[in-house]
Structure formats: C-alpha cells, structure tokens
Length: 113
Length: 113
Image 1 (cartoon, rainbow over the protein chains, first blue to last red):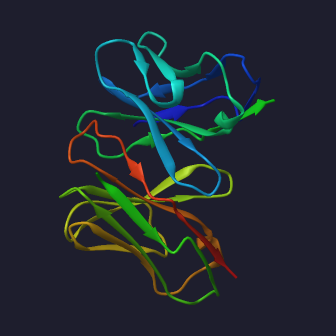
Image 2 (cartoon, rainbow over the protein chains, first blue to last red):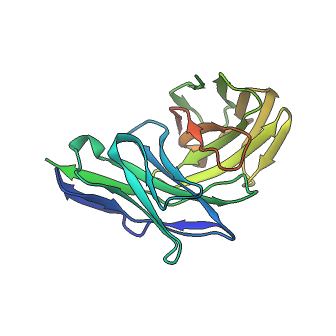
C-alpha cells in the first residue's frame, strides 16, 4: 500500500528565511512524487513533481524539492520565504501503474512578516 | 489550455435533500476524473475516480454516487444528504498516463443543516 507522511502540522518561518516542508513516502517500486499548495477555499495547485532523473526538482514560485531514495524523502524547499507562501502544502505519491495518489495530511505554512 | 469548472462554489442543503455537484473539463480529451472530499481536518479522501465514460470506481462505501455521462463531465450525487456529508468537495482531472499531475477545480463547500 502507498502512504505519505508529513510529520509536522504547522511550519512557522520568518519572511526571508529558508522554508522546508518535510515529506516521507512508502510505495512499492519507483515512486512518482508530487507537491501541491492550497490557499483558503481553493483547490490544490500543482507545484512540482519527481518522476526520474535529477534528484533536485525545480517547480513554480521558486520552490524546489529533493528526492532522497535512501531516506524515502521528498522535502519541499524555498531559499527565501514570502508572506504570500503562507498556505497548506500537500505531498503525494504513487507507484507505476497505480491511478490513485496517496496524499499526506498536509502542512500549514505560516510565514511571519 | 485546459480548464476545469466546478459548481456551485458553496451550497447549504437540509438533511435528507438530494445533491448534485457538477464538474466539467475543457481543452483535453479522455481525462481521468476524480472526486475528493476534504474534511475540516484538512486530509483529502478520494471518493470516486473514472478512466472513461460510464466507468466509475468507488473508493469508500458511503451515501454518495458518481456518474460520467460525457467524456469531460463528472457528477457527484446523493439521494438523501446526511449531516456527515458536509465538507469541501474537489473535482480533479489528469491526463491518461501514470505520472501526470492532478489539476483541481476550486471546490464546492457543502454544509448540510
């Protein structure tokens, strides 16, 4: 079975500081990994994905994520957080041949001015 | 470009009344379609997904049903709403290949009173 863990409920960071949102996964075989962001009362927006190749993936709005196979992690990062980055962030994973994404429970990110 | 439309944005319905939420996708053909529910605690629950017209997979037994009468139309229904059906309902689509990301609509906030 596929599963995704986002161990922190909320991440607080000062504006301008680096932001990291943690994610670990459990899937059989090689994983496909995704990050999404959700603003209040809106749907989820796709940020980036890892399929294969370079372990560092760059996405929208200056976000990037690093795939670490040995640690089964896919942490989301941004070098300098903005107040507008305050939102709910979801990590998701699936394995080849599976139609159903496994989502983490989400992390609330609060960027403090 | 592809777009997804979901309506209504908010809905207040009494217990025992019927429900019909509609989702349509434009700019693509033969998409995979999904209905998710997001409870107040933020987690996403996959309710139904469809890989083609008339093909519906149900993930969780419940008071809801889904139909796909046309290639790019996905409908979520209930004959009699329960209080526990309250939540934020999200429709999503993806291309018909395994590593395609989901693209979400803006959701419907349903309150059953």
